[in-house]
Structure formats: C-alpha cells, structure tokens
View 1 (cartoon, protein in one colour):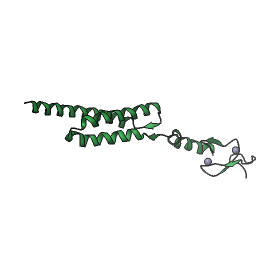
View 2: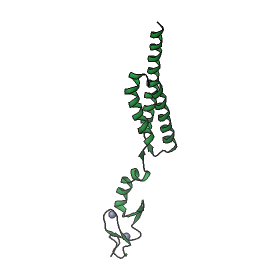
View 3: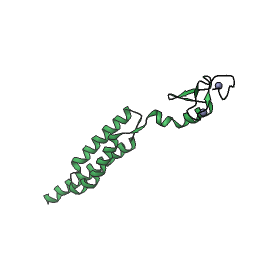
View 4: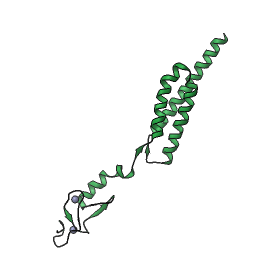
Length: 137
Ligand SMILES: [Zn+2]
Ligand SMILES: [Zn+2]
C-alpha cells in the first residue's frame, strides 16, 4: 500500500475522511483520528462544536420552566410571592453554574428566568398589597 501523495512511500494508515492510504508525513491527527491534508481542513471545521462539548445547562432549563409555571399559576393565585423568589434563586444557580463552566449553554434562559421571577414577585406583592388595602377599606 503506497501513499497517495508519495508513490515511493509506504502508507501508514488510511485517512478517516476519504479512506485513501497515506504515509506518516501526510497524515495529521485531529481529535484522535487520522486525516490527510485536504480532509483535515474539513475535519477541523466540522469538529469544534463536538470537541468543545457544548451542552445545555439543566438548571437553566428547569429555571425557565419554573418561571413559565410561576407566570401562569403565580399571577392568579398570589403564590407568586413564593414562586417568584424560588424562580429567581433557581435562575441565579443556573447562571452561576454557566459562568463557572463556559461550555454550558443557557445563560439567556437563566437570565430570562430571573427577570420573570422578579416580575412575578413584584406583581404578586402588588396584588397582595392591593388586596390588603381593599380589605382595610
Ligand atoms: Zn482524506
Ligand atoms: Zn505521503
């Protein structure tokens, strides 16, 4: 088996991309796999997302779901005074984890959860104050 580029050189291995035999000099290792010069360019372009291992942050998802649940339930039942702060805390936890681990995605969701939590808490407080004032009259 001869190298595709060097007819006098013994091929060391096949390229992961095109499966052609190449010699030791032509093969480049990318993320543990061997590629020839032209496939390397494609491999490097295609791999970064996989290699950096970006993954969504579970806390951020949970915080956002909690925020949406709170927004639906909390506003009509005044339990937003409890759900609001829980949402804010959950969002803050998610935000902290994401800032510690840059490969986690979901900072936007965490921020949205915190904002929704603050809004729910504020609105629930206004509702409670209004209800108390009403009762006072
Ligand atoms: Zn190749
Ligand atoms: Zn070669």
